[in-house]
Image (tube, rainbow, N blue to C red; front, side, top):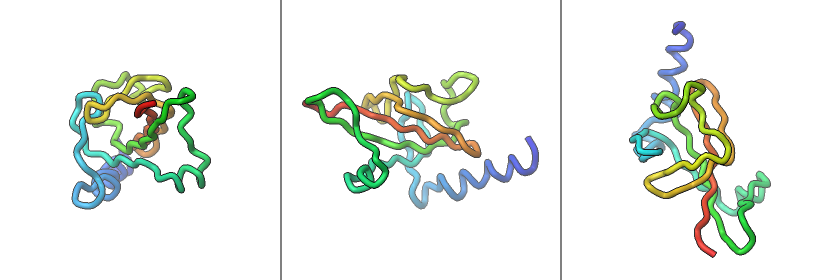
Length: 116
C-alpha cells in the first residue's frame, strides 16, 4: 500500500468508525465488526425519496450499515455484498438493496420485513 492509502485507512478507523463517538460493535454475517448502523426516520425517507418497496401488506425496515471493507472477511474477492444477498445484522435477517465502496468504507443499504 502507498502512504496515502495507509493514511486514508487510518482515517476511516479514527474518524468515521470511532467507537468512542458513533460506531458500535455489531455482528454482521457472523463477524464482529465496528460499524455505524442507521435506521432512517420517516422524514429522512421522505426527503431522500427512500422507501421500503416490499410486498403489499408487509411493512418493512431500512437499515444503512457503514463498515470497513476489511472487516467483512467472508466476502468474495471484490469485497462487496451484492443486491439480493441475504445479510444478517445481530441475527436479524435482511436483504441487500445496494452497496457502495469508497475509501475502503462500505455503505450497505438493507431492507427487511417486520410483519404484516
